[in-house]
Length: 192
Ligand code: GLN
Image (cartoon, rainbow, N blue to C red; front, side, top):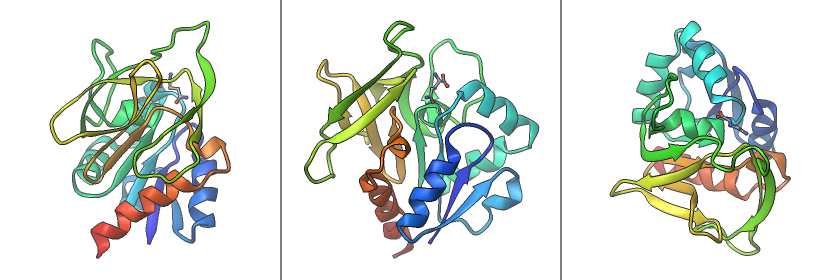
């Protein structure tokens, strides 16, 4: 199983390491041809405006849109924003692949980073320790999108639409491999 990690900016190394721990072949993606032969892709957290700017410069926007329409793709934090169809009034390049509306920097500046334990549908106990860093939330999901996790106030912070996965937090900054394993299972299903 070959899984790419978009390596333009942000926390990509950590995803690569976790995929390797799970026995997958992890490939850093910076140029369009590096998407060839991949079975899935992770778009990491970082800064979505920077990721969008660099993806545009490197000619990756079209190839990434094409990839996310066909293959398993998981966006974490900035990656979730980049994957979404609707980011409100923000003017920045996005893939628009997943039928979710996202609010960037949803927690404001004062409490822009926090950690909390989350129940995530599809993962066995215990709760997942989730690290939120200037995180977005999902404000709306279309039919066919499943909310996998919510904060205590009900706001959605993880969602799945078939092959597409979005998480508002940074699972690569803990040593819990369960979400990476969950994504690898989605990739395996598409290969079966
Ligand atoms: N606030 C960032 C953005 O808008 C996301 C932060 C993150 O990925 N940790 O892209």
